Amino acid sequence: MRLFEILEEFKKWNELKFALLVSVLSLVLHSTFLTHLLGMMTIVQMHEMGHAIVANLGGIPALPIGVMGFTMWFSYNRIYIFALILILVQVYFLYRFYQNEKLFLFFVGLFILFINLKMTFFLPVIKLHQYISAGGLIGEILFPTIILSLFFLDIEIIPKWSFWKYVLAGYVLLGYTATLKMWYRIAIFKQSLPFGSALSSDGASDTNGDLNRLVSAGWTEHSIRQFYFNSVKMSLTIIIISIVYGFWLKLNDKDSEFENSESL
Image (cartoon, rainbow, N blue to C red):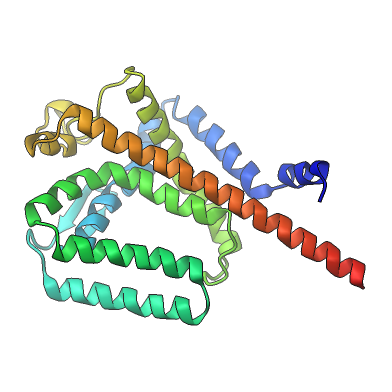
């Protein structure tokens, strides 16, 4: 395929045009009076999911209540029967992915299982709770990364993915672009770290905030910055790789269609 044909295919790529359009729209909307509403609808939901996912992977059952802006804990300590059930569920899905030759999903699932085992059996509870505190802001980065990396791929195992991927990508992009903007402003020292609780009446002075807990546990502002900056860099790298890989698959499908038409 010649260069101009590749460029034409790139310009016609609907997924990329949709992602760029929603990103620009999100930045515009987050510059208006709708900022708080959009944040409550998207960022807060992903934030609480981040807390809950880290807790569950560490063997502590938790349920995100994003609408209310908090996470419900069922125990402060690990419940190993819950951890065992979660591990068995993952093993079952790994078996199905391998059986159906979904190697991409198989290796992703294997990586998640490895993290699950390490956090459940090899991480002290005190350290786990530090990661749970850090998990809120990570959730704002992690969930968009997962959805957007899958957005540029055809996932046949998910029913009607060609429709739902636009709904999910549009949703996470409304929050992800605001999150990237926040960390960019922090990186150039135009905004301070988000200490305190977003929903508390006293804002950054609330010592129950996630970052406040990390500082109490011995983290420094520098280590907090580096941790989240590295997370953002990794997120963007994964999404870019997914875009390149998705476009490569698209070109291969186009070449296959062209070869089949010629053979006929």
